Image (cartoon, rainbow, N blue to C red; front, side, top):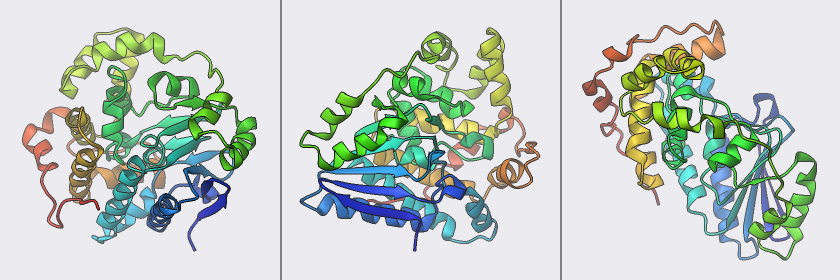
Length: 343
């Protein structure tokens, strides 16, 4: 039995992630259960909207089970490739659903939770929303279609988020277009009832309940973000930030703590994804994560951040300059097991 609950109510299929002790982080069994629910909902002629949410009031979904992946990768298990294969196919299914999809991003929405929300038609933030793609801090990349979604954000907001793992609240998510609506958490029960039993289309219901999310700090940062993060080399971004104001220098310090390899391939992924399809982005991400399995930084990052929690990862290579173009290109090769394919 997986930690995914489904319920048909009126016109809606509700999918609830219920793994609260792990902030609703998803493992492979949950991924498969979610994908199956999406397909069942899309095939049901009486369902015209799918609503996905997290149980409890702390998290929508805090990501994937990276500690489990750490174990699988260390053991050389094909569970690593299997997890990402199944997760990315699920992400693509979210993007291509023929029915309305409403993600209630109430609470922590990071990593795998981003892949379950940003590709859907409607993304609802609340005052508890905390959004981030913090993968460069654990030797990974902003995957789950993240390179595709981030590349489509205004200006260089996506590049900034990909490299720094910056955290956004609801107002920032609305400003960036990550969230389509803001609904206070106390009104979510009403929203659920209306989505289940209301005669109006999902978008109309959401527009009716949409409320001001407040002022976004991003608006004031946009000029700096767009200026410094427009470069196509991480070294040039860092050089620009180092010569900037206090905010820019703070971003420089954040990036300096991340995995140099992850930074380089993440920027490459975001740039490659611009203007492309989610399928192309997911295939590139799959190539990258299959190569990451055989590297060192993911295991070191998870150890430092989530296992030993000393917050002092020793990256290898340790500097941006050591991660040359040939090394970046090696993360773009088709894996021995083959490329990711979609139905």
